Structure formats: structure tokens, C-alpha cells
Image (tube, one colour):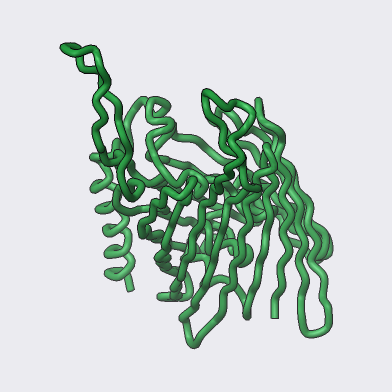
Length: 336
């Protein structure tokens, strides 16, 4: 068991080292902002997770664990279904759906999908600034399959393979990415640790070509050159987190969580989160992000109710942002 655990952690460290060419752990991380593609994958899903500042890689939460830590799926009971919607500025929406299921023994499977979308937008040009009458579509999507296994009573490992695509006015970009996660119960009360490598994969660029106009200094005329699009790296991020129930009574439970995030395309930051449950029915949540320029604190509330053979979950979160409209999230879940 120890040998397998060490091997998995070595894999994560090796992949992290392989990302050195992408400036995985540079000193001045803020200089990397805007250097990756498929950045919609950095948008938090699940009102419970976001209400806790997304400090959730070490939490055995709900089916949104498929999005944050594939290893945490092995901590879920029965079959879990989660759906979430994020309302962003400019009438942009991010929808997520995930389902996890215990297959047999210590083996679990999950499927998740997400789409960032908006209403068709009218095309404008320099000569027709009020619109040409033509419309274009912008969408980001992912489809993911997750496998998780409990290698022992304390240690779990999970992997997610996902197809990610972007469609901007007919220009298609797609690639395959991978998430690797671990989940470890320390044996000290309810203290646990997790390490997760998310969105790891090859560089991607749009299909096709574009016309680049270059001024010929000899003739003074513009030459048209057919060029390929430049390739950029995915938004790889390495997260290390911990969580623990500091109060665990019959009718009251308080969980505290902390997480260190190392993104490939921005500065390192820290997420802090808390969750209080009353009668295992009503939850109050709070979170804070350190060294994040746009986001800071978040708040959330949740309900967990039995409904015959099912258990229903409803969660809401609010995120405070410095410049943009404060996004709100609504999630619903079902355990059966």
C-alpha cells in the first residue's frame, strides 16, 4: 500500500516537473496572466464549493467533486447527481452537470459536462459598427469521464479524462486534458489532505488559418499571408488542500478548509473556507481568497432534505468581485 501511495505522488510530482517549460512554479506568477486557453475551466461550479472559496479539494462533498478532485468521488455515498448554473456578466451562463456512482467494491465512476454559452451576437465591422445582419456563436464545452478508487481505508486516487472544445464564430479549437487527484485521511480525528493536478494536457490552437496583412516597405502595398493560429497552453493548476471538522456534535458541525493553488497562468493564491451545519439540514458557508485580484470573499447557504428514498440538496452562493458584476450560483443535487 505504501509503495502504491508513493508511486502516485511521484507521478504528480513528475507531471509538475514536466510543466516547468510552461513556467509552472515561477516566482513572478502574475506575469503569466492571459497566457492560456480554455480559461472557462477556471470558473467555479457548485454553489457549495464556491461559497467556501473553492477550498474544497480535501472535502468529501457532492458530485461537483468530479470538477475539483476525482479522488474525492470515492468518498461519496450511493449515486449522486448535481447540476449547477452560474450567471456571469453580459448575460453569459456556465452550466454544469455531474453524476457519480459506486460500481463495486472500492471502484467508482463519474461523468460530467459543462458549457459556457451566450446568446448569438451580431457581427460588427469598422464600416458597419451597428451590425452587419450576420450573427456568430461563442461556446466553450467539456465532457469528462472520471474513475476513482479507494486503495485503502485512508487513501484514494482518481483520474479524469476530458475532451474540451471552443467554438468562436466557426473557429473550432479542441484538445484532451487530464486531472489526477489524491485524497488521504491522516488518522488524526477527521483531518485529511489532498493533492490535485487539473487541466493537464498539450497546447491547443484553433483549426484552420487566417489572413495576415503585412506592409511591403518597398512597394508600399499590403501583402496577404495565410498563417496558422498560435498554440497556447491549457490552464493547468496544482492544488494542495486540507480540511477538518473542528466541531462535530449531534446537531452541529463546523468544517474548516484551506488550499494552496499554483496556476500555470497567474500568481499563486490561497483559498480559505468554512461550513457550518445545523441538524445536518441547514448549512451556512463562507470563503476568502488571498492574492486574487478580482475575487475576494464569498458566502453561501444550503439545504439537505430527505424526500422518500431520495435526499435533495439545494445550494446558493454569492461571490464578491472588485470590478465585475458579482456572480450568483445555484446548485441542486440528488442522492439515491
